[in-house]
Image: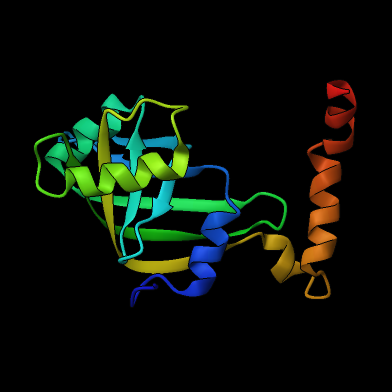
Length: 161
């Protein structure tokens, strides 16, 4: 199920992203950007993020719920930036058990979940590598090929064998 803000394209790109970045602001106005490894769409228009080791992000959200969430498929070099409002759900908070259960099923037992960050999207804008604009003939397959070379994927795979 998509929401008015989260289109199928946004959800598909979210699925191909390994990390997302959550940008928050402290009550003193200090920005903070933190990578998040465990995140998902809840099926009802919100994005759930596991609070695994994010005391600064959580503290910032508890004093200022405005946030920006970004994710990018590093090989295709396309993604989305989403502005919205987030709240921190802890055990005992209304809705915590339902959202916690969704996240737990999605990520399994690998990580502890200290709280659930429930992000409500308000606006979405695309993130597109400048190469697509500078070289209109470049396609996603070309970009993936270049990314594989840039990230030295083949040599990394060789070291794992």
